[in-house]
Image (cartoon, rainbow, N blue to C red; front, side, top):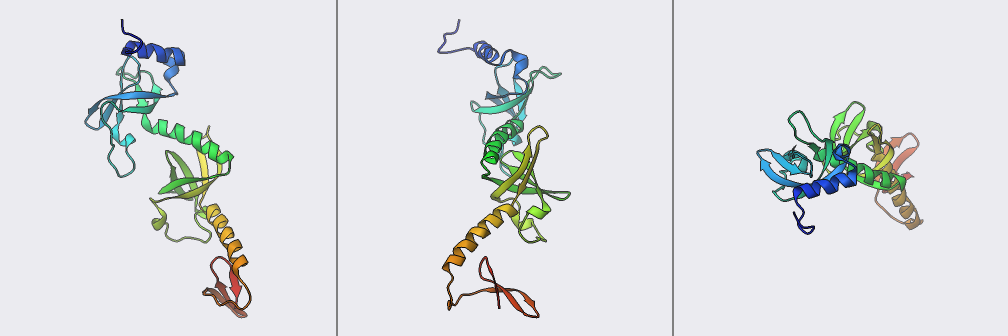
Length: 225
């Protein structure tokens, strides 16, 4: 019989079943597992169930990079099913990342804090944003303060966003980049106004010309010439 200091796989499975209330209760949970083998493009992972599960290596890699995974690594995975038709556990690293991301995002949303994300795709009416595992919708009107013709330079780079609304049951998150820019601009304008004084000579950029003068951008605030 194995000692408590060196539990066997059966001991580990029994402890997990006691914690979660049985093998069926594994489903729908994020659990820790151990990588027992790497087979071509799949990672074989033991989470203490009767059978191991296989997860594509790409689920452990950042976009455009290779997965840095080796036998013996401990990873978190989501148990979709305890056993499929082949008798294997159905596991997902992507789903585990999404669940963890949602927990963190809900906390940030409650504080009205900014979150970091990456614009990675286009959809009808806007764009998709990866928030470290959770996918959000960025409406076209929320990309910038002014209309943007080409969003390509803004894609695939980490940048701050403000969560406008989120619904975990529906898997729906809406974010805004414009809100962040407006807040930053307001801070800059406040600082600029305090630094301006009569008779000061500063540089500006002509934004618009009308019959009665020209509007000049002084770095966050408009002046009429």
